[in-house]
Image (cartoon, rainbow, N blue to C red; front, side, top):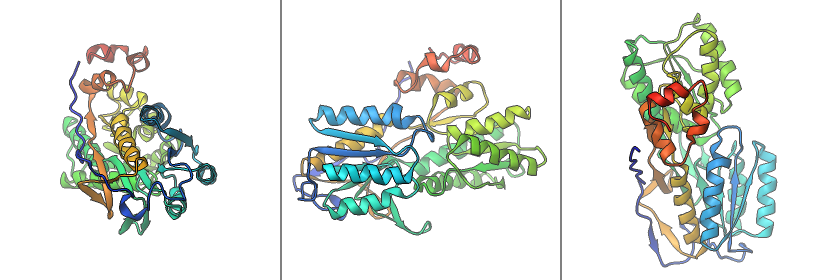
Length: 359
C-alpha cells in the first residue's frame, strides 16, 4: 500500500456561532427557505466524467444523511433546460442550502433565484460567476473545489516531463492544446495553470482547437489538428481523461505514442497511464471535495456563518489539493477506494498491473 497525504489547502473552516451566510446570500433559515433541513444538489451530467454519479452523489448523500438532513440530489444530464426545471422543483419544495455544479452557465439564474429566497448557494467544483472571462466575479456565496490552477500546472508538468523522457526539445516540440469547454469556469483555470508551466519550459501551441468536454468531439478536433500538422505531433495537453481517451484513439489509429496529460483518475485514464498511452492523470479525491462541501453546507443548515482563509473572485473559497498519478502511483487510487483493480486490470492491462503492483 502506498500512503497518501491528502491535504486540504483551506484546512481550517473557522466556524462562528452567528447565524446567516457569507457573501450576501441571506440566512439559510429565512422565510424563503421553506424547508431548512433539505440540501438541494444539482449535478451537471454523466458524460463529461464518471465522477458525478459514481463519486460525488454517494459521498454527498451519505454526509447529509448521517448528519440528520435530507439530500435532494439530481442530475441535469447535460441539459440547461432540465437544470432550470430541477431547480424550480427543488425550490418549490424548499431548500435550506443549494450545492450547484454549473453547466454552461445554467447555475447563474438558479443562484440568483435561490439568493432572492434567502437560500445560500455553494458553487461546487466549478465557479458560478458573473462579469467577463478576464474579470470574473463569484456569484455564489461560497466556492468549494480543488485548486484548479494547480490541476492545470500538474498537467502541464506531465507534458514537460514526457517530452524530456522522450528526448524532445520543448522549445521546438509540436504540442497540441486540447482544453475543456470554455463555458466551464474551471477550464480557464486548468488552461492557465498548464500554460504557465509549459510556457516556462519553452512550449508553444502548434494547434489549439476550441475546447470541449466530450471525448468523441475531442477526437474529431484533434484529428483535424493532426492533419493540419502533417500528421506530426510530439505531445498533447489534454484537459481531462475523457478528452485524452478520444485523443488516444486517434494517436493509436496513426501508430503514434506521445505524452498526453489528463485528470480525474478515471478507469480509462488509469488504464492509459499504465499502458504508457497517457503520461499521467491528476487525481482529485472526490470524497475530499464532497466532505468539504457537505461540512460547509451542514453548518449553514444549522444557521451558522462559516468563514474561510481563502477567497476566489471575491468570495470564500475552500480548496483541496490534487495529486499527480504516474504508473507507479496508480495503486494509490485503488487503495483509497476511488478505483477498482478488477475494473482497471482487464486482459489488455493485466501485465502492466502486475508490473506496477496494482491489485
